[in-house]
Length: 304
Image 1: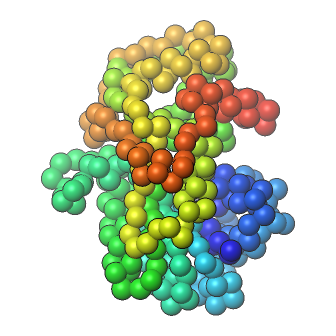
Image 2: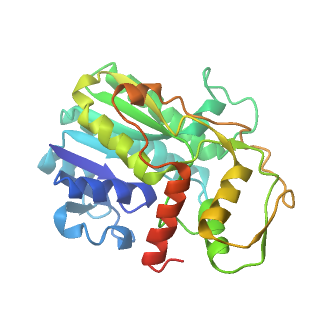
Image 3: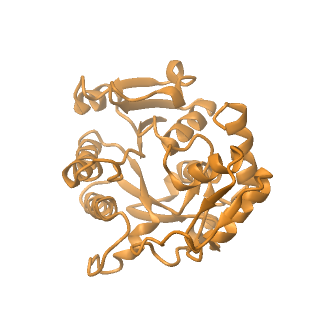
Protein backbone atom coordinates (compact mmCIF):
# COMPACT_ATOMS: atom_id res chain seq x y z
CA UNK A 1 0.00 0.00 0.00
CA UNK A 2 1.35 3.39 -0.99
CA UNK A 3 0.20 6.38 1.05
CA UNK A 4 0.55 10.04 0.09
CA UNK A 5 0.67 12.29 3.17
CA UNK A 6 0.23 16.06 3.25
CA UNK A 7 1.02 18.25 6.26
CA UNK A 8 3.70 15.81 7.40
CA UNK A 9 5.85 18.52 8.99
CA UNK A 10 2.99 19.77 11.18
CA UNK A 11 1.89 18.84 14.68
CA UNK A 12 -0.47 15.97 13.83
CA UNK A 13 0.92 15.06 10.42
CA UNK A 14 4.39 14.42 11.82
CA UNK A 15 3.00 11.96 14.36
CA UNK A 16 1.03 10.16 11.66
CA UNK A 17 4.19 9.93 9.54
CA UNK A 18 6.20 8.56 12.47
CA UNK A 19 3.59 5.86 13.02
CA UNK A 20 3.39 4.94 9.32
CA UNK A 21 7.16 4.68 9.11
CA UNK A 22 7.23 2.55 12.26
CA UNK A 23 4.68 0.24 10.61
CA UNK A 24 6.93 -0.01 7.52
CA UNK A 25 4.37 1.58 5.22
CA UNK A 26 5.37 3.00 1.84
CA UNK A 27 4.86 6.74 2.39
CA UNK A 28 5.13 9.64 -0.04
CA UNK A 29 5.37 13.07 1.60
CA UNK A 30 4.62 16.32 -0.22
CA UNK A 31 5.86 19.53 1.37
CA UNK A 32 7.33 22.91 0.54
CA UNK A 33 11.08 23.34 0.20
CA UNK A 34 10.85 25.94 2.98
CA UNK A 35 9.08 23.59 5.42
CA UNK A 36 10.74 23.01 8.77
CA UNK A 37 11.46 19.27 8.89
CA UNK A 38 12.71 19.14 12.49
CA UNK A 39 9.72 17.03 13.57
CA UNK A 40 10.33 14.40 10.89
CA UNK A 41 14.11 14.39 10.50
CA UNK A 42 14.31 10.78 11.71
CA UNK A 43 11.80 9.75 9.02
CA UNK A 44 13.41 11.50 6.06
CA UNK A 45 15.41 8.50 4.89
CA UNK A 46 12.44 6.16 5.30
CA UNK A 47 9.94 7.85 2.99
CA UNK A 48 9.85 9.65 -0.36
CA UNK A 49 9.80 13.46 -0.12
CA UNK A 50 8.74 15.90 -2.82
CA UNK A 51 8.86 19.70 -2.71
CA UNK A 52 5.70 20.80 -4.49
CA UNK A 53 7.00 24.32 -5.03
CA UNK A 54 9.69 22.78 -7.26
CA UNK A 55 7.72 20.09 -9.14
CA UNK A 56 4.10 19.69 -10.11
CA UNK A 57 1.68 17.78 -7.94
CA UNK A 58 0.57 15.84 -11.00
CA UNK A 59 4.11 14.58 -11.58
CA UNK A 60 4.09 13.11 -8.06
CA UNK A 61 0.85 11.26 -8.79
CA UNK A 62 2.14 10.16 -12.19
CA UNK A 63 5.24 8.61 -10.63
CA UNK A 64 3.92 7.30 -7.31
CA UNK A 65 0.28 6.29 -7.98
CA UNK A 66 -0.84 6.33 -4.31
CA UNK A 67 -3.67 4.10 -3.16
CA UNK A 68 -4.43 6.27 -0.13
CA UNK A 69 -4.16 10.00 0.57
CA UNK A 70 -3.99 11.23 4.17
CA UNK A 71 -4.57 14.97 4.08
CA UNK A 72 -3.36 16.89 7.14
CA UNK A 73 -2.16 20.12 5.52
CA UNK A 74 -4.15 23.16 6.62
CA UNK A 75 -4.02 26.93 7.04
CA UNK A 76 -5.64 28.16 10.25
CA UNK A 77 -5.84 31.86 9.52
CA UNK A 78 -3.45 32.68 12.34
CA UNK A 79 -0.77 35.38 12.23
CA UNK A 80 -1.04 37.43 9.06
CA UNK A 81 -2.70 34.82 6.85
CA UNK A 82 -5.41 36.41 4.73
CA UNK A 83 -8.67 34.73 3.76
CA UNK A 84 -7.40 34.09 0.22
CA UNK A 85 -4.36 32.21 1.53
CA UNK A 86 -6.54 30.13 3.85
CA UNK A 87 -8.94 29.26 1.02
CA UNK A 88 -6.09 28.39 -1.36
CA UNK A 89 -4.64 25.89 1.12
CA UNK A 90 -7.80 24.44 2.62
CA UNK A 91 -9.99 24.44 -0.46
CA UNK A 92 -8.16 24.83 -3.78
CA UNK A 93 -5.17 22.66 -2.86
CA UNK A 94 -7.57 20.02 -1.57
CA UNK A 95 -9.68 20.12 -4.75
CA UNK A 96 -6.50 19.69 -6.78
CA UNK A 97 -5.70 16.59 -4.73
CA UNK A 98 -9.21 15.25 -5.31
CA UNK A 99 -8.98 15.80 -9.05
CA UNK A 100 -5.66 13.97 -9.22
CA UNK A 101 -7.00 11.20 -6.98
CA UNK A 102 -9.80 10.72 -9.49
CA UNK A 103 -7.48 10.88 -12.52
CA UNK A 104 -4.99 8.38 -11.11
CA UNK A 105 -7.62 6.13 -9.53
CA UNK A 106 -6.63 6.59 -5.91
CA UNK A 107 -9.04 4.56 -3.79
CA UNK A 108 -9.14 6.38 -0.41
CA UNK A 109 -8.89 9.97 0.74
CA UNK A 110 -8.62 10.43 4.53
CA UNK A 111 -9.23 14.08 5.33
CA UNK A 112 -8.63 16.02 8.54
CA UNK A 113 -11.72 17.94 9.66
CA UNK A 114 -12.68 19.82 12.80
CA UNK A 115 -15.20 19.93 15.63
CA UNK A 116 -15.98 23.50 14.50
CA UNK A 117 -18.10 22.15 11.63
CA UNK A 118 -20.89 21.79 14.18
CA UNK A 119 -21.29 25.56 14.20
CA UNK A 120 -22.55 25.63 10.61
CA UNK A 121 -24.33 22.29 10.35
CA UNK A 122 -26.71 20.83 9.39
CA UNK A 123 -27.75 23.54 6.90
CA UNK A 124 -24.27 24.90 6.22
CA UNK A 125 -25.43 28.41 7.13
CA UNK A 126 -23.34 31.16 8.68
CA UNK A 127 -25.90 33.31 10.45
CA UNK A 128 -23.73 34.24 13.45
CA UNK A 129 -20.04 34.75 14.24
CA UNK A 130 -18.17 31.43 14.26
CA UNK A 131 -14.89 30.19 15.74
CA UNK A 132 -11.90 30.55 13.36
CA UNK A 133 -14.31 31.49 10.59
CA UNK A 134 -12.01 31.42 7.54
CA UNK A 135 -10.53 28.08 8.53
CA UNK A 136 -13.84 26.49 9.48
CA UNK A 137 -15.72 27.60 6.38
CA UNK A 138 -12.98 26.62 3.92
CA UNK A 139 -12.56 23.20 5.52
CA UNK A 140 -16.32 22.65 5.55
CA UNK A 141 -16.63 23.61 1.89
CA UNK A 142 -13.88 21.14 1.10
CA UNK A 143 -15.66 18.16 2.62
CA UNK A 144 -18.67 19.01 0.47
CA UNK A 145 -16.34 18.80 -2.55
CA UNK A 146 -15.17 15.44 -1.21
CA UNK A 147 -18.76 14.30 -1.13
CA UNK A 148 -19.21 15.47 -4.72
CA UNK A 149 -16.23 13.44 -5.91
CA UNK A 150 -17.48 10.26 -4.24
CA UNK A 151 -20.67 10.63 -6.25
CA UNK A 152 -18.86 10.74 -9.56
CA UNK A 153 -15.97 8.29 -9.12
CA UNK A 154 -15.03 5.28 -7.03
CA UNK A 155 -13.10 7.34 -4.47
CA UNK A 156 -13.94 6.76 -0.79
CA UNK A 157 -13.69 10.11 1.04
CA UNK A 158 -13.31 9.89 4.82
CA UNK A 159 -13.27 12.90 7.13
CA UNK A 160 -11.90 12.74 10.65
CA UNK A 161 -13.65 15.52 12.60
CA UNK A 162 -11.13 16.21 15.35
CA UNK A 163 -12.01 17.60 18.75
CA UNK A 164 -9.42 19.50 20.81
CA UNK A 165 -6.19 17.54 20.48
CA UNK A 166 -3.12 18.00 22.67
CA UNK A 167 0.31 16.46 22.79
CA UNK A 168 4.05 16.92 22.84
CA UNK A 169 5.87 19.26 20.44
CA UNK A 170 2.82 21.36 19.70
CA UNK A 171 3.14 24.74 17.98
CA UNK A 172 4.26 27.74 19.99
CA UNK A 173 1.43 30.10 20.84
CA UNK A 174 -1.30 27.50 21.16
CA UNK A 175 -3.17 27.46 24.46
CA UNK A 176 -2.16 24.07 25.84
CA UNK A 177 1.47 24.59 24.79
CA UNK A 178 1.42 27.95 26.58
CA UNK A 179 -0.11 26.37 29.67
CA UNK A 180 2.47 23.58 29.70
CA UNK A 181 5.30 26.09 29.52
CA UNK A 182 3.90 28.19 32.35
CA UNK A 183 3.29 25.16 34.58
CA UNK A 184 6.86 23.92 34.14
CA UNK A 185 8.80 27.20 34.13
CA UNK A 186 8.16 28.27 37.71
CA UNK A 187 5.84 31.13 36.85
CA UNK A 188 3.82 32.42 39.78
CA UNK A 189 0.43 32.85 38.10
CA UNK A 190 -1.48 32.74 34.83
CA UNK A 191 -4.60 34.69 33.90
CA UNK A 192 -7.37 32.61 32.33
CA UNK A 193 -11.00 32.89 31.28
CA UNK A 194 -13.68 31.44 33.57
CA UNK A 195 -12.92 28.05 32.00
CA UNK A 196 -16.53 26.89 31.91
CA UNK A 197 -16.56 26.02 28.20
CA UNK A 198 -16.85 22.25 27.70
CA UNK A 199 -14.29 20.52 25.52
CA UNK A 200 -13.53 16.96 24.43
CA UNK A 201 -9.75 17.01 24.88
CA UNK A 202 -7.92 14.04 23.35
CA UNK A 203 -4.24 13.09 23.36
CA UNK A 204 -2.53 12.87 19.97
CA UNK A 205 -1.57 9.20 20.28
CA UNK A 206 -5.26 8.36 20.55
CA UNK A 207 -5.93 10.45 17.43
CA UNK A 208 -3.18 8.71 15.47
CA UNK A 209 -4.65 5.36 16.58
CA UNK A 210 -7.98 6.50 15.11
CA UNK A 211 -6.37 7.25 11.73
CA UNK A 212 -4.60 3.89 11.76
CA UNK A 213 -7.86 2.14 12.63
CA UNK A 214 -9.65 3.75 9.69
CA UNK A 215 -6.70 2.92 7.44
CA UNK A 216 -6.75 -0.71 8.56
CA UNK A 217 -10.51 -1.01 7.96
CA UNK A 218 -10.64 1.12 4.81
CA UNK A 219 -11.90 -1.70 2.59
CA UNK A 220 -15.04 -1.89 4.72
CA UNK A 221 -15.83 1.75 3.91
CA UNK A 222 -17.49 3.13 0.78
CA UNK A 223 -18.47 6.54 -0.52
CA UNK A 224 -18.56 9.53 1.85
CA UNK A 225 -17.73 8.77 5.49
CA UNK A 226 -17.32 10.91 8.61
CA UNK A 227 -15.86 9.98 11.98
CA UNK A 228 -15.85 12.22 15.04
CA UNK A 229 -12.59 11.87 16.98
CA UNK A 230 -12.53 12.61 20.70
CA UNK A 231 -12.89 10.83 24.02
CA UNK A 232 -16.67 10.93 23.75
CA UNK A 233 -16.99 12.93 26.94
CA UNK A 234 -16.55 16.66 27.50
CA UNK A 235 -14.96 18.31 30.52
CA UNK A 236 -14.72 21.98 31.46
CA UNK A 237 -11.61 23.79 30.32
CA UNK A 238 -11.11 24.68 33.98
CA UNK A 239 -10.97 21.01 34.91
CA UNK A 240 -8.40 20.30 32.21
CA UNK A 241 -6.21 23.21 33.33
CA UNK A 242 -6.31 22.02 36.95
CA UNK A 243 -5.39 18.53 35.76
CA UNK A 244 -2.38 19.96 33.92
CA UNK A 245 -1.28 21.76 37.09
CA UNK A 246 -1.63 18.59 39.18
CA UNK A 247 0.19 16.28 36.77
CA UNK A 248 3.03 18.75 36.25
CA UNK A 249 3.44 19.25 40.00
CA UNK A 250 3.25 23.01 39.54
CA UNK A 251 2.38 25.51 42.27
CA UNK A 252 1.24 28.13 39.77
CA UNK A 253 -1.81 30.19 40.74
CA UNK A 254 -4.61 29.72 38.21
CA UNK A 255 -6.47 33.01 38.00
CA UNK A 256 -9.76 31.99 36.41
CA UNK A 257 -12.03 34.79 35.25
CA UNK A 258 -9.23 37.32 34.76
CA UNK A 259 -9.49 37.16 30.97
CA UNK A 260 -12.61 37.40 28.78
CA UNK A 261 -13.80 34.34 26.93
CA UNK A 262 -13.80 34.42 23.11
CA UNK A 263 -17.40 35.19 22.19
CA UNK A 264 -17.14 33.05 19.05
CA UNK A 265 -16.13 29.90 20.93
CA UNK A 266 -18.74 27.15 21.13
CA UNK A 267 -19.94 26.63 24.71
CA UNK A 268 -19.76 22.85 24.38
CA UNK A 269 -18.22 20.38 21.95
CA UNK A 270 -18.10 16.62 22.36
CA UNK A 271 -17.52 13.81 19.87
CA UNK A 272 -19.90 10.99 19.07
CA UNK A 273 -17.34 8.19 18.82
CA UNK A 274 -19.81 5.38 18.16
CA UNK A 275 -18.75 5.01 14.50
CA UNK A 276 -15.09 4.67 15.43
CA UNK A 277 -15.95 2.18 18.16
CA UNK A 278 -17.72 0.00 15.59
CA UNK A 279 -14.38 -0.27 13.78
CA UNK A 280 -12.74 -1.41 17.03
CA UNK A 281 -11.03 1.84 18.07
CA UNK A 282 -10.76 2.72 21.75
CA UNK A 283 -8.64 5.51 23.30
CA UNK A 284 -5.59 3.98 25.00
CA UNK A 285 -4.62 7.05 27.01
CA UNK A 286 -6.88 8.83 29.49
CA UNK A 287 -6.55 12.61 29.54
CA UNK A 288 -4.45 12.49 32.69
CA UNK A 289 -2.20 9.82 31.18
CA UNK A 290 -1.94 11.85 27.98
CA UNK A 291 -0.87 14.96 29.89
CA UNK A 292 1.73 12.91 31.75
CA UNK A 293 3.08 11.44 28.52
CA UNK A 294 3.18 14.87 26.86
CA UNK A 295 5.13 16.33 29.77
CA UNK A 296 7.53 13.38 29.87
CA UNK A 297 8.29 13.54 26.15
CA UNK A 298 8.66 17.32 26.01
CA UNK A 299 10.97 17.23 29.02
CA UNK A 300 13.07 14.46 27.48
CA UNK A 301 13.38 16.47 24.26
CA UNK A 302 14.34 19.62 26.14
CA UNK A 303 11.25 21.55 25.10
CA UNK A 304 10.31 22.29 28.71
